[in-house]
Amino acid sequence: MSTIGDSSGTESTEPEETPDQQDSAVAESQVSDIVDSEDDEQTEEELSRDLVFDVLKNRRRRYALHYLRRADDSVQLSELAEQVAAWENDITVDAISAAERKRVYTALYQSHLPKLDDAGIVEYNQNRGIVELSDAAEQLDVYLDLESRPDIPWCNWYLGLAVGGLGLLTGAWLGLPPLGAVPDVVLATVIVAAFGSIAVAHTYYARHASGAGETPPEIQDS
Image (cartoon, rainbow, N blue to C red; front, side, top):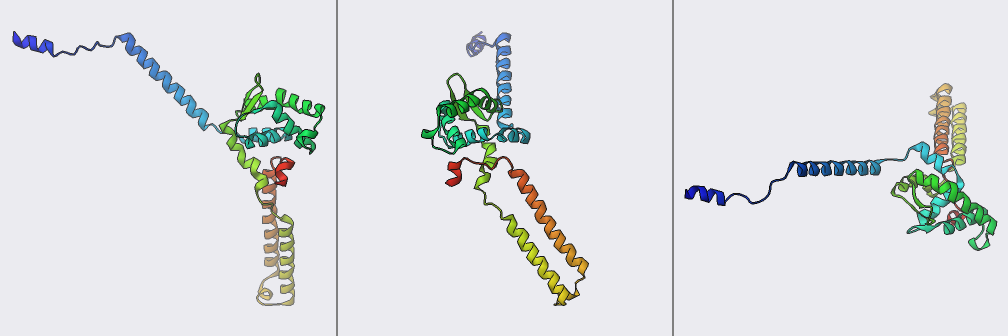
């Protein structure tokens, strides 16, 4: 009899979970997993190249992004419109007219900022008139920073190739060693291939730099 009493005294007093509680816990876990998965997808989502070029093909949007990149926090739409209007007219903020300011303000308010917000590049509160860059905007840095790259002097490359090619042909014509032993066809092929390589590199650079390298006058002069 004592054995029965001892075993009953050592039984756990914690209540067992009911089926409803277990189902609720499973449902909460599934919801949490779904939310985490969606957050990961949003974080890893990259802006498509077509979207980037569509956004950056407009100078007013590029100017707005340049200004937002320089801001430490969110900015007022009125402040942004004033600076963009000043850059567009190559004047100071104090010198812009009311019409110039209103024209830029209206375009940013109704068109450009909503487009950037829909693309996930900025966080735009239209009611409060506040805008700031989102984390995804960092993907535009490679395009907006093109002006910071050293400009390649393509004319010097072409001129150098022309002078070098002329020197090779002259040396071969005079019979200077070792050029005198090289067939004319080989020399011509080398020169044409060199010009073709530079032309391909020039074309590639120009296509990837088009539309994104234009910067506000204030940044160009700095």
